[in-house]
Image 1 (cartoon, rainbow, N blue to C red):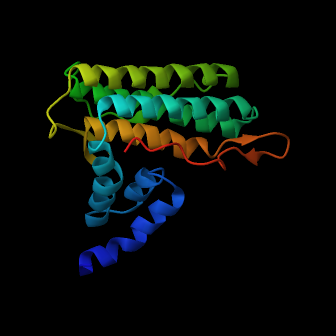
Image 2: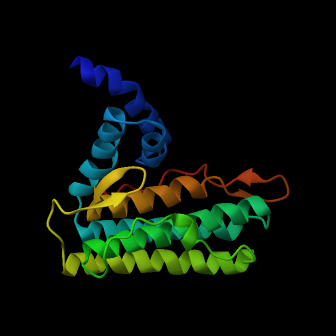
Length: 202
């Protein structure tokens, strides 16, 4: 093993212990330069590159089932509503980056906060918006299957840097999976994310 890879190994182990690629975005946001590139390449892009757009759409659908189950069990607290609003905002924001890869819009380097639901949204409304947002992402994955961009076409992520269309789909799958594990249910606010991680699309 090269000295470079030995130095990066602890980060890879950290990601592996979190299950699938759920920790990729978290690690990459907190590290810079070489390590960020290594994690993005090995945890997002490489697994995504081994999958077809159909595979990724199916992974998004499966992940959506888990999201709906966790959201359905979540108690009505400000903390849970914040988690759901964050997931929805990132999902919608990421969709517009995917639309750039589809040639449906020009790139705009905006922020995810502009895509969040209103602060007055109720828990039932957030559950509905979550399902709608994930369905829209699945539809974009299917459009990519019909009209795939060049393999080396990338669209910038504000924090992670350039991602391919497949990398974006994997990122959205794993981001929502990771964040939804913060939801709490019941009078004692037990965590909902202790089940097995969502199946990897790669």
